[in-house]
Length: 72
Image (cartoon, rainbow, N blue to C red; front, side):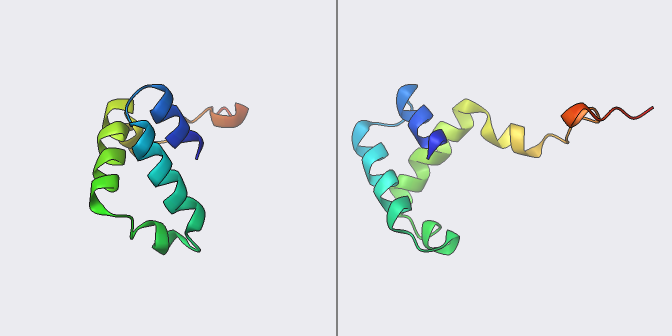
């Protein structure tokens, strides 16, 4: 939900989209239920995610010095 809130704060989602997405997530009993979100809401999340670079962050390999672990 924090990411959805940030999308609203950055004006990447409308207040109505944010409310609908938040309500959908809140009522979902499982991740599979979330995946059944109506297409227009998914498209809004996808557009906002692209602007925020979320996909790029998820595809980037972890740093070798993550959590203070340094290889060498």
